[in-house]
Image (tube, rainbow, N blue to C red; front, top):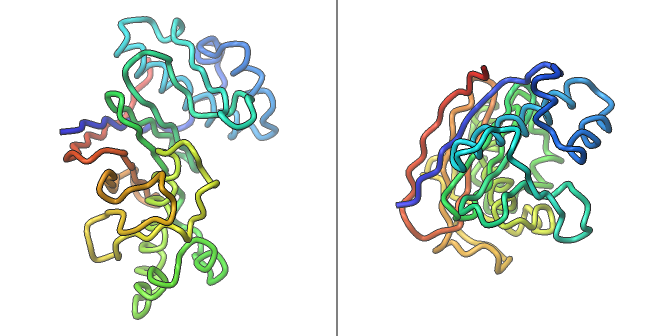
Length: 230
């Protein structure tokens, strides 16, 4: 059994107490955001992830340092990790939702999206292949939007779990239809094997859709909770 814990939060203020949790590289990334809300989302993701990691490591959050080196370009915008710690982290944010997922060393990807946007034909054609588009036929507008964002978050979570992100084309992934339990049906990319992949829908609150993906062939147990920073 693979256990995955997910924490949800709303954006923190840019207060010195939270900013003090960031290292020099993270402070540089925080300053680079032009919009305050983007700064706050980044800050919240790091503060929450460091709080979760600190509990697992038996340290204070300020003592946790992430390595976020990108495997492709070497810049510090890759997925955060604590080398040798024995757990895997994924951070995602959208709108007023920031989430962190953690597993015991099994690759995990988390994605949350604001699901109140319109799912127009161009977006659907970009993200869904013909099999998935056909599954939307006959749905009401509301059902169509809900189904699209279920597909979208599932695919994004899968790509994040591999660490390859958008190098895996969205349309190369086929997910189960909206009336079925979430699962990977097929993938044209060898990084994703349906036998060794688990998907799970999450509940980030009204107006949002979210999913996690775990690269494992065992059953998946997921717990969700809200973070109340002190």
